[in-house]
Image (cartoon, rainbow, N blue to C red; front, side):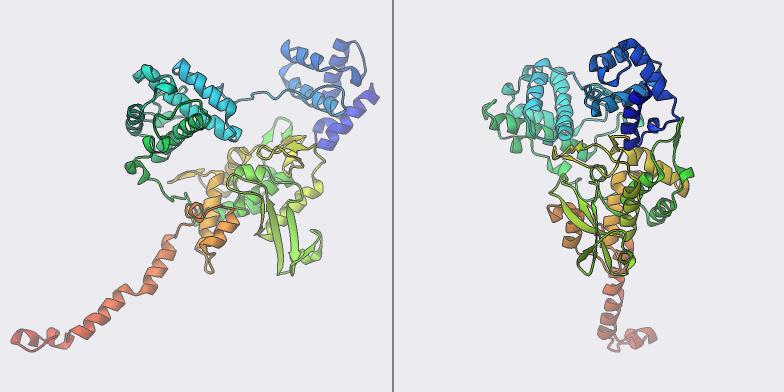
Length: 488
């Protein structure tokens, strides 16, 4: 049996599993139970049906189910069974509710739309909220074919007066926000979802054109006036402490599970420094490819382990994958980021290929361990709380919780307000925006920069000089002007 287990251990050890070590007792325990159930001591006879049966009948205690999952992944990699089916994990159930006829149309649109899965699901959730409103207020308009301009007007008016928690399926997580007026951005998102739905249904000739969705469901001026650039920049003193914490991260700072640290320190450092210096979205960080760092010295490529990397004029380039506003591109980053990623790549175990969630390509992901990709939520759920504890700063400020996307706003604002600032178009290229209008949401002039510009403009001094030219201050101050002396 040891020869059979050696095949599995080799695969798990290559992926970075602790189960791949010879001194691990869990893998032999679980494998022996499977061999007994299967009445065969051979790995190649472990079938998908056997793994499904063990899960369905709960034949193993909870602590050993994770080992069962890893064992099936290894047996699948050896070509003897199917990989474990993707579970729902802790995700909530699929949203339902509202007028049944409306929900059927929404599901039909969801099955046909070519938007990304996450965006498509978000639009579906917003559309189901419309369905609950229809069921309560306008049951005669449950069929989209019955919608008129009057129905659109009624929905826009109701949405403008809607509060948090109205017509939602679940209120878990809303906490003290329930009952407060919806923010302008939420109202715009609801209207955009409905515009998208009716526009697509008309373009696909599912519905005849009874109204123009772009006009009948346009965002009212009172709501549009509240929308605009509002980056939630982190204060300089808090951001500096987070930078210090990230650059001085130690093994003791990492959160621990019952079996030790979940990820190696090199991986956590690489993700942390990437968040602090790259200005990327969290999903872009999670989708970075192996070898995304390139070094150049005097416009010539050089290897990452060369001494030239430390040269003053060495350039570190980061290859950014295809993202929500454009295609892949390369941008310069601080050398400390490149060095940290190179340190992780030097110890990173070989991982299987993963399917990119946006491009559907199979590729080597930089941030993967134990044959699993690091979740895009890892920064929000683990990295940021860890840095806040080490830096001694709160996890929230006056502008809300410190989230992964706020780093992008902070970095962009600092680059725009630097002593030698980036221009708007340079910042647009560095952030990877398709339009400079998107960049304006991040490039916010800080009060210090505005104060310096106002001071340099010399408003007060200019008017004082004008007064001195127009008025004879000596005559006015001596009182001679009151006796009739000319003072102008």
